[in-house]
Image (cartoon, rainbow, N blue to C red):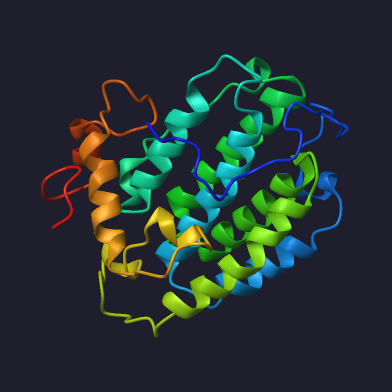
Length: 245
């Protein structure tokens, strides 16, 4: 499982000062979205895999913000599965998290993050608009639940600049994966988690090694969000599961 990254930090993380109503949960319920506008603008300019990685990184700000305030293991397990899915979306199995089981100002936002990121990653290659909507939503939610917005805001601008520098979108090849059987082949270069640490130099080649490390330690038997070999076969996955070739 993943540990909290150095680039995620909070002022007074135990403070829950934001209003929360479990009957709500739409993006507009989280107030204005200057950060979400920034995020979507950058997403339009970068490769699909980098968009997905950005969505996972924003979700890290939500998951770790509530670390220690609940007793569930699912949020960190989901992060591991989501990073695996940036290698190939089919690694993230289909699931539904019952809304009625996730209530209140801690588990409610976690449910929102997990549910929206799962959909954005699952369909984002073939339906980019859903990924853009997911990014906008996650940026709003991440900002809304922070004890103070400054650390997230200070992180976001340099990270978006780094993504545009390292993973500029390339022209789409209409003949690549003509029958939509290999989404990974249409997602662009591998993206490492360290890309989201502004204190580290950009090393785009590190993406492959990072993802293979995550895939090497991921086990569907102990992570309910990861696809089994049978799930992958049903999804028309070819090759060796959880191995980058």
